[in-house]
Length: 414
Ligand SMILES: Nc1ncnc2c1ncn2[C@@H]1O[C@H](COP(=O)(O)OP(=O)(O)OP(=O)(O)O)[C@@H](O)[C@H]1O
Image (cartoon, rainbow, N blue to C red; front, side):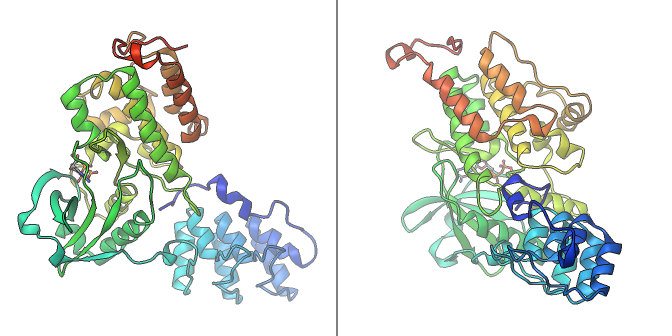
């Protein structure tokens, strides 16, 4: 799912220091994008598949560093497109991890595979369509990809998400969807909506997840309005824990890309769970090739500035969206409902505009946390791990249960 800027968890795969002398100069020049140097070494007779201590070849390094010309040159000179390093990674694994789309295409065209990444995923678990009677399904919601129905499967109420035929009929889009779903099916966490499988249906794409009877956080805020501090912190911790699980996914972090109150659902025990991660990327990719998704404007409200400006981005775009969701929980809904969401995103991206943090509503530590989370510089935003620690510390300062009943959103926290 990761297709953006390099993530630190992978930087260990890059040799820290490459010997710039002797045959290893080929590796050094490849990692630096030094085409003349690479040519010289190959002309000297250095073997194009020479590997370092970790079996990292020149092609691994050029793919990892985004040196397209070097990749082309090395392939021309006989570099093995599927050479594996000590971790079983191929050049395509590296190009994908570091978000070099053009290089991925070149490697794929030469038969490159990614044994540790997308290519390694098991196909989606398929559920026979006779097991779910779609004729008796109850419509519970509609999103940009299709409708959501409440259905029964093996005696249990579950949710069936139908993907519009305008999307599912495009083979490439369908393949992308199935890849995302195959990744989702590997995930297990109390704060992540459980994926159950894909309905084996001759001409429709329908997938099944657990059913969360309290609906989305968007619905909850509409029903309840402002939430008190304890509830906000409790909900924020649920979301942060689910998101931290996604961001710490191995071998690559999973970026949600569309974290909004509509994509956070609540079960009957009151626990919040995150859903629909990664699927928005499919919408974005198809927008680029002329395919227009409908109804996506709501997400502008939670969009990180760097995404709006179409810059490279990383996990911290989800931290930005998280801050806006937490902000909304104190307010009972978005602060600027009357304003066009795209204009809001524009002002956030180009004028550093942020929603107001009234001192009578937002305790000081929450104000500080939100400011950090929606910091204009993505590198200055905290991680979900740090956010969880801060929220737990805020929670530790709550009055005991006896006093909790009388405590309003203006609970004092240091
Ligand atoms: N697993 C589920 N259990 C219960 N209700 C659900 C479930 N999934 C979705 N819903 C309900 O259906 C609504 C529509 O969901 P859906 O995920 O299709 O669209 P969305 O999140 O509103 O928009 P988008 O598709 O753009 O992300 C949700 O807001 C929620 O109320």
